[in-house]
Image (cartoon, rainbow, N blue to C red; front, side):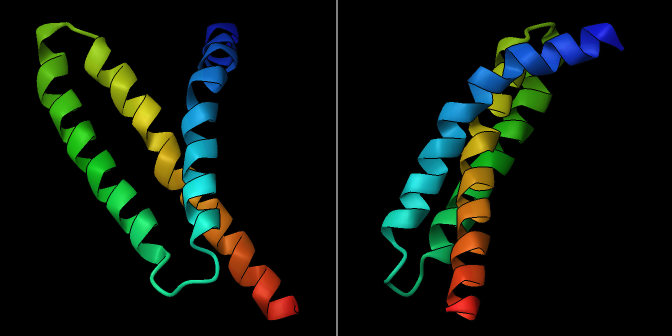
Amino acid sequence: MKEYLLGLVYGFPVLLPMFLAGSMARFTRRGKPGGWRITALGAAVTAVVWLIALLLSRNGSELPGLAAYFVTGFPLGAAVCGIGLRLRRVDG
């Protein structure tokens, strides 16, 4: 359990920059229609990267898995920002 928590503590700085990049990319499209495309494109790229990581990690390399973990932050940030923008629009 302790090693799992340490892994999350060490992994957070890796995920944060891509999370912020996804949030900023989605936030820049806030007034324009089709902002969801950023989230959808990021999710599609992430799925491809995870598939590649799954195929390459069988050879014992951890780098594709780390790259997939890093790329996952982008669509997560875009989705969270999109949900926040939608909730703000409903309230205001």
